[in-house]
Structure formats: structure tokens, C-alpha cells
Length: 218
Image (tube, rainbow, N blue to C red):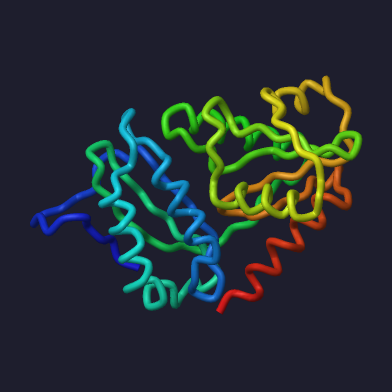
């Protein structure tokens, strides 16, 4: 997929990236498109909310060029890059699975996502932990959900699983100051990833629900 520009300015070149969104594709489609667009509208670039015009451009770009532009990577990753001046481009690349799926590896990713959220207002990944039949998660100070995390929260509500926000959850897992039975990461790029050394029924059900969504995408 070639780079696209928001305006018709000649000589357009993207500047320093201030926001990068990475969304998983399935069969040349974006399964969580509406959720991703809502989360995009809640994001910030240099302290200012992403404009409605940019979100409209992203929707139009996906509608008009996504199928053609993802021919080489139909199940890859769609990337939206916004520079410090609010100009945007989209590109598509192959999906690369995580190398470290341990509880500590997932917790470190969640910490990096929370750090990103300090400047963009939305963490693209969040850690979830099952403890005493309760699901705990941490979305950062603003508590704005990414597309994938809004899906998992809705799945948990549908299944009747109690949930509670737990600030500093990733740090607690890394420091081993919290007791848990399972850990899983929820990511716009990787979906639901149960920890290889702390997996259980809750994460498996969420992962199955996410994979079902991908498989049913047409």
C-alpha cells in the first residue's frame, strides 16, 4: 500500500512520527475498524486530539484502497502514522508474532504501551490478570480503551466475569507483588495473547473469541 497524504500538497513528505497505530488485518479487512476509529478519535498528537477530518480520511482510505493495498499481506498489520504536524500516511506490512510470551515479557510490553499513552492518551496494549475469579486490567491514567481492549471488556461483560481496574498491574506482575492464576495481553496488533507460563480458561476464552472474529471476517 503506497503512502497517502491528507492534503493535495505537492512534495508531501511525512515528518517525525508522533503517533503510530498498528492494527491487525484479516483477509484484507480490518475486523475491529469501528472500534479502532473510536479509539483513534480519542488519541492525541502533541497534546491535541486527533481531528475528525483525519479520522474521516482514515476511514475513506480503508474503504477505497485497503483491499488492493493488502494483496501481499492479507493477514498482516495496517499501520497509521501521524507526524508532529498532524499529517498522516498508511502502509501495510506482514504480521510478526511475539517472541516472548511469558508473563514478564507481556508485562514489559504493557508497561511500554502505558508509557506511550502518556503522550497519545490511548495504550495500544494492556495487561489483564485473573486473580480469584476476578479480571484485573490497567489502561493508564486516562483509562481510554484501544479497539481490541474494548472488545475484550465487552466479551467479559457478556460472559458475566467480574472486572476491576488495577493501576500499576504490569509493575506488580514484574515485581511479583500480586497473586494471579493467569496473565494475558490484549493488543491491537497481536490480539489476545495468553502468557505461556500463566495461561488459563479466561485468557483462552478471550483468545478464542478474538480468533473467531478474525475467522468470520469476510
